[in-house]
Length: 111
Length: 137
Ligand SMILES: Nc1ncnc2c1ncn2[C@@H]1O[C@H](COP(=O)(O)OP(=O)(O)OP(=O)(O)O)[C@@H](O)[C@H]1O
Ligand SMILES: [Mg+2]
Image (cartoon, rainbow over all chains, first blue to last red; front, side, top):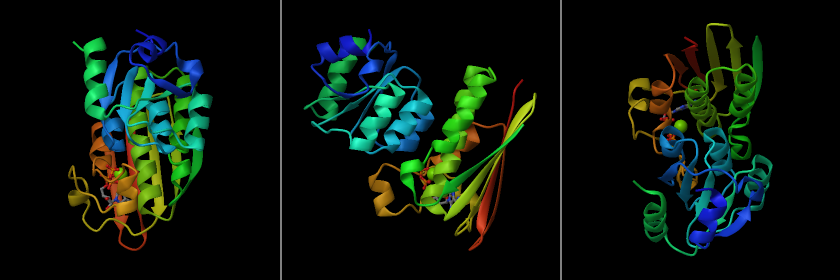
């Protein structure tokens, strides 16, 4: 499944990085601790977090994640969105909390 | 080949910039992708430690056909007890830095896991030098 299909299925809002919607999704990772993500997330995963500042993009880009999902209707800060556009890594947003969106993501792509 | 990058203490909006430049160079040189992944984790964590804990620093990258050696030297408070700092979960990060999601105390353990050789030398009230070496074969 690619990021665009995921966006449709989970009714996510596309905040930025639209050019990366074709990225293929290879799994998911959830953490708000940046060095946990740095150490354990893998290329092509969708990263679910509540952090919205620019450093999430440094990590997303170095780790080459497929996309970021922000929970509870959070939106990226302006400079975060700019890097997301430059790096072509989409930032998506959901009104759901981490538990709910993780469950739905797992149903779609888990196992 | 040798490259040098400045690292600004306290400036989180540039954190990761030097690591990202090194990643580009390694990709251009066709270094093995899984090695690049490891190197990038170690570099980023060491770079962010200067931003989070020190005043200013330098990243020096030496590339040969067999290895990459990265030395990050900073002017800063230094690390009084390095073996304690290496423990997963140990952090002196400020509440503001923690709020951003830093300060899990996982940076140094990540570095250790993701390079072949790690040397840390530190002097309290002067600064810290972190030297990471990864071999290409
Ligand atoms: N360059 C440095 N200068 C001064 N102290 C440092 C430096 N690097 C690490 N430390 C000390 O070692 C501790 C552990 O570092 P480590 O990178 O493992 O965790 P952290 O930076 O606190 O959190 P995280 O890396 O998980 O965001 C730091 O909290 C700090 O006290
Ligand atoms: Mg750290």
